[in-house]
Image 1 (cartoon, helix red, strand yellow):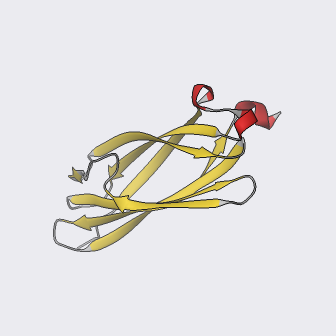
Image 2 (tube, one colour):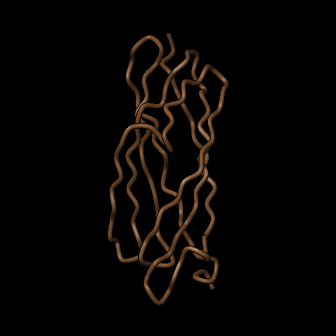
Amino acid sequence: MTPAQFTCTVVTQYLPEQSSASEGRYAFAYTITIRNTGPVSAQLVGRHWRITDGHDHTQEVRGLAVVGHQPLLKPGETFEYSSWAQIATPQGRMAGTFFCISEDAHWFETPVGPFDLVQARALH
């Protein structure tokens, strides 16, 4: 049988109302859409994020669930959630892994490739 598989897309947004350049605090929202692209139902159980600011300072976040949920996705189903991260510079990156298990009890990982956290003004 073909193994279980999830794919992810990410959209980010700078949060000026939760940021303060004078205090070195830049907040970013991110929305993740997870789609079960495999042939069997599977559940997202946990995650590991690496959040790196423009000075290469990295924070790691590990834990069960995403925003309090451990969604069970049938083939073709999606789950979307939003969260946020805070870094000390106007530019940074995030990448991570979701830890998942298929309905037939096979563990698998779903990588989330690096995505940018960028304050729009920081690009100019």
